[in-house]
Image (cartoon, rainbow, N blue to C red; front, top):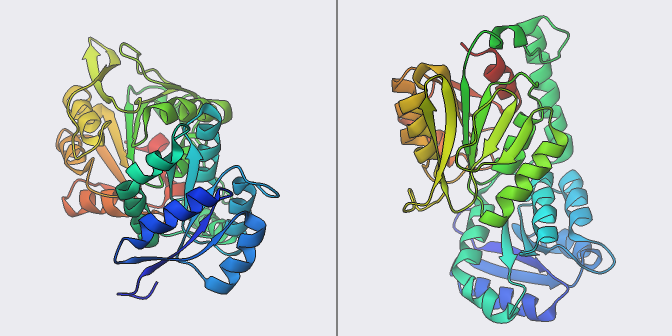
Length: 361
């Protein structure tokens, strides 16, 4: 997008009512222009080619070709920032999570009752997410593969291990660590890449991903089904155990506490922190207080500054802290703020982070 020009949006939805509503909402913003609409991905393909939009809003369930198939194809051939539009249902959550893994930037939860009024009420959120998507970075699958291949070459030179990531589990067996991870926009994809690379003997892990309540449970279930460690949505009293990752439930903060040698989590309501709940800062500050130098903190892609101050407290308490680098971040806001505050020991690309987690001091 040319600096100073309007963000050009293509709206794809099989509902004429939704297409009309999204067009009206987005055109109200001075810096956004809907340049076209399409009733399904087949029609959309030609419009993507001819209109060259900066952002696409994409429905999930459509005739002739579903949104996921279109998204996967788009990310391979012509990556453009995509905001998904899906119903707030269990199936809708699972589909949206898959879309985020495929490269979608964000999502809008389309209400299942009184859709028209519901979409109108979401006007400010829709505009905000399209603006964010316009600033986000997306890479084609081919580009992502080349990026990973280059990282493997660098690791090969550093580790003398034929380009393969070595997880030195022997070092972890004698330590009692906690891994704390925080993320926002682009985080589901980043967290998935990290968690699925970790071995069964990984230290107990606690995660905050900015996400609504109904999504966090589905996210945990999906991660659990594809990972070597156990992943679950946290409830108060859950122990932080080796080989287990606990994800903060949406709309609740999560803190870590200690009872003797045992770490456990507490799920609390409380006011929003940095305009979000759960907050990465709330988690990181509790880890700094109760785990200190026994912790490793990771701040991943995301907009804003949630987690930066908490990470600084972790570092000051003796924890080892890691920030995802700009090149591999969808949105570099959260890591950048932590780096600027001096809260970070190591800045690393996404696919190097699992190695650092397992082999950190």
